[in-house]
Each structure stands twice: as C-alpha cells, then as structure tokens.
Amino acid sequence: MDSIPTAADTAPQAGGSSAKQRTGVRGEYTAETKVLWLYGAGEEPTAAGHSEHAPPADPSTSVLCVALVPGYMTPTDFLSFTGAHHTHISHTLAVRHAHAPSGCLVALRFTSAAHAEDFRRAFDGRTFSPLEPEVCTVGRVHGARMPGRPAGHLGHPLEAFRVEGGENCAVCLEPLEGPLLTIMCRHTFHAGCLGRWGDGACPVCRGRQTAAFVDHEAVRGLDGLAEPPAGDSQCQECGRADDLWICLVCGTVGCGRYASGHAKDHFARTAHPYAMKIDSKAVWDYAGDGYVHRVLQSAGDGKLVALESSSDAPEKQADEAEQGALLEAKLASLRDHHAEEMLRQAHELHAQHDRRMAAARQAHERAIEALQREWAAERSALETAAARARRLAEDAQRRLEDRAASAQALAEDMRRRLEEEREISRLLVERQEEAAERERRALARVDELAEHVRDLTFFISTQERLAKEGDAAELQGASIVAPPPPPEPRQPSAHRKPRTSGKRRIPR
Image 1: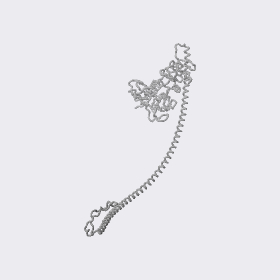
Image 2: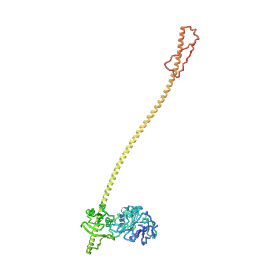
Image 3: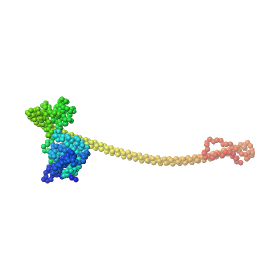
Image 4: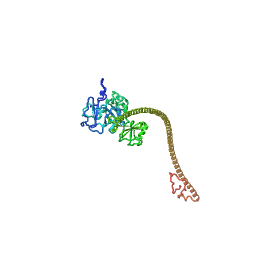
C-alpha cells in the first residue's frame, strides 16, 4: 500500500534543493465530495470535485479539513487560533494549497468524532483575524487521495496522517507520540515543541511556513481588535444593544454618552482616543472632542477608506482623503503601540509567572524536605516504640512462662496430694466399715451373753424361791415360763440375732 512521503522519503540529497523537494506536496479540499486531495511533485490538480469520486458518507469521522488558511498564519499560529480545542487534536497536517501558493490547507485528526463535530460547529464561518476578510471554512473528510495514486483511487482519511515509526522529534529528540504537527515541508514534530522553537522556520530544513511579507508579531498583537457582528454586539458594562461604540485601539464595546456613557468611561480609564459608532461607522476623537471622519472597512484588504458623499465639494473630498490618510496613520501607530504594549505585558507576565513558578517550586521543595524530616522522625519514633514493645512482649512472655511453670508444678503437687487424700479416705472408709462390723458382732455377742445371763439369773432366783417356799420334789418335771425381758435402752445392731421367745426348759 502506498503512503504519503515522510521526512525520510523527502530528505534532500547531496547537491539538491531542499526547499524544492520539501514543498512538492500540495493539496486541496472539495466540500461537495468531502475529499482531501494531495498531489506529489510533478502531479497536476485534476477535477477533484466530480461526484463520481465521492466516497461513502461517514458521519462518525474524526478527520476535518480547513480548506484555506491565510499566509500570515503559521501552523503554530493556527493551533493558537483553535484555542481550547487543540487539546483534542491528535495530529495536525499542513499542506501547501494547490491553487493558492501563499496559503495552506490544514487537515485535523481529532481524538473522537464528537470533538471533531464540536470544532466544526465552533469555527466554521469564523474569521481568522479581526482585520482580515479570510473566513475559516471547516468540512468533514470522508476520503483522501494520496500522492502517486490515480484520481479515482481514494483511501481512508487517516492514511494522510501516517508517520514513519521510529522517528523522533527534531526539537526534543523524543519519539513522535501524542499530539503531532506535520508542517508544509513534511517534517513532523510534537505540537508543543514547534511552538517553543520560536522563529517560525522549520528546525530541520529552515524552510519558512508563511509568506515573507507577514509581520507575525503585529498580527498576534491585533487579535483583540475584532469588530463584533452588529447583531451580537452589546455594551460590555451594562449589556445595552443600541447606541454602541467600539474602541479602535483595543476593540472594547461601550454605550454612548446618551445612554450610560461607558464608551467615554473607557477613554477616561485607558486614554484610547478613537471610538467608532458601530451602526454609522462615524469615528469620534475624545481628545479633540469631535468627529474625525466617517470611514468604512474595505472588503478586499480590510483597510480603512473614506466614505464617499455626493454632496461634498471636491476640495472637501480632498481634505477628507488627507484626513483619512492621517487617521489611518494614527490608527496604525496606535495599533503598533498597542501591540508593543501587549508584547511587553506578555513578557512581564511571563517573567512574573516564572518567578511565581520558581517560588512555588522552592516552597514545594521545602515542604517535601519538611515532610521527609517529619517522616524520618516519625519512623525513628515508631522504630523505638516497636523495639520497646518487643522487649515488653518478651518480658511478659517470659513472666507468663514462669507463672505457667509454677502453676503446672502446683497443679501436679495438688493432684498428688489429692490422690493421697483419696487413698487415705478409702483406707479410712474400709477401716470404719471393719470397725462397724466388729462392733456389730460384738454387740450381737453382748446381747446373746446378756440373754444367757438373764436366763441363768432367773433360773437361779427361781430355784432359790422354790427351795424356800415348797418341796422341790413336787416341782420336778414342771415347766417354768419366764416373763418377757424388760425393754433395753439401746437398739440392737441390724445384724443382731433375734431373741428367742417362748418357753425355756429348765435343765434338770
């Protein structure tokens, strides 16, 4: 697949002309077909607007084209013209215009289709400079014709932004990544690096990017002199939309003295003497307290010219022409002074910004050093506290181990004593049971012997009584019934043998 020439492809040969080789690629854009046409060296522009070359419409395209950028704008000036939208532009491609050698064509690749559409709505139909008539025409790009290809062979728009891999930016020597800018000599840089280069020429081939007659400092200084459209003008102080005057030095819009007088207040604050009434183009000189001249802005070159009046005499017209020339000279001097003042203020602001950045950097470094010292102190304190905590933990663990050993020894001693107590208790119980058994047997024996003693006592007492009262022979063979024994004061043992009751025979 063919590709557009790169910095390596178009490098000047020994003894060749660098400028000729680098400016060989030209381009144009057709709004009807939404096609970007690029022509190489030796190729002539063709009828690019034919409908048969129209590619399929792509509403989601992220590629736009500015059809013609005037010669007084460099590619970096154009990026400044885009304002806040430049942060969404990933690649800017500037190509010499095929039909306007003093101007160029700029193709823009955005990060998304939504950002591209926002840019088109914001800049399509907007003037590039307040004092110049050129209008920014922005269109979508649905196809691209690359150099060396047939007219009917259209490729994808992103092919125009192809950059050879491995190339580095010639300014910062970093790889070509991020927002890129390809200028008309086909060299590619970072978008921010070329703006910092500063002299308006290519850092590689030293080729100029604009027409030689353009004073870029004056053009940049006149960016604030735009005359607002009459339908959108209003006083910047009170918002009135009638009886408006615009300062010809700085472009401030204010209301007249018959309204709130903010235009005159602006003169009192800034000493800008000339103001023009927006609806009648009459110029008022606050210093001379009178009208200076009636002027119009030429549609061709944007310069101030005299307003012709059929009722004026030829002498008066000559005087007015002379006054108009003087006025234009005064306005040019005021514009130059205003541009120099703006440049001086910009340098002062830049120096003040550098001083503030240096002070902020020093404060930041001091804050970092203070934080580092604080962090080191906190780290040392934490390490000391951690060491102390480790020592306390070790001491506590050692005390706990000692207490655990003592408790274990005490528990072992208590267990041994408990076993001994249990053994003693068992032996005591056994001896108590044996003593109780012996006591039971002894009580039973005592009861039995007491029974025998009672029987013997009764027998003896009976014999003695019988011997005293009667004949013993009569009582031989008789039965004696003993009375029941008297109740005893203590209970017999449970194992005591029951007492035999009834008649007991008296032995003979």
